[in-house]
Image (tube, rainbow, N blue to C red):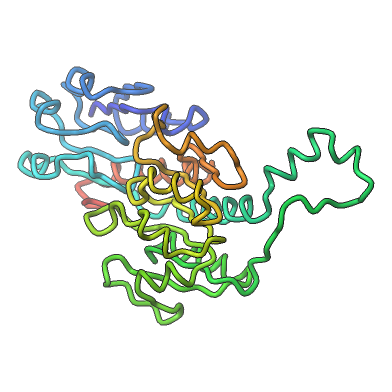
Length: 318
């Protein structure tokens, strides 16, 4: 019976039932694993299930039984693929499981910022509404999405799903392909500068690479409308956080919503922590993907990837 080691069970959520993996082998589950703990925990493993802990020559050299790494994510940049290939260790990931969840989170952040929900919620809960002479309150302006330009950076599955929802809310969709390979006759393709100048809302759904790292920096923010909202649900380093903090303080843009950061968990010296006004900045702790449905899809796919591997089949192999 194969030994399966789950290195980061806690990152999947304590509400997920992992008992199905016992059908595939002897299972050992660790809540979290640091890089220096990997070697000891996988030394007898046939299959490793992991998320973000690095997998490389240093910590796998003595894992002589290792045959497969099943990634509980789409990205596998923390794996030394060249080394794993040299050992004929199969790597399988999961794509598409969180498309609906992340698109939904993107829209929810946009509406939170557009409707100044933090301000109005606090207005009521602070007791100010009780004192009011009016049935309503005009403390902060609210704008409709109807007729606004929604700019998409990265028109992959999540970008397309977000575009469809935004379009249903009345937005005109424009997009910028960071690779230049993505062509979509349904939506208007523009260059990067045009997207910055024209968009009322910009949402980022692109992969992190040499073309996208630091893409949203001070120079970019200076080209955006001072009422525009930036949303990043892709990868933290695509947005220069120090420049974003400056742009928000100086009123270069209207607001920002981030579900990803350059370093996660957030570091105490992150300049964005200086901005405590939730009308301008909303940060969520990388939760766009964590709907129960998304995580259930994820783990079902991981199970099927391992089952296929054991049956001598290739499934989601990268």
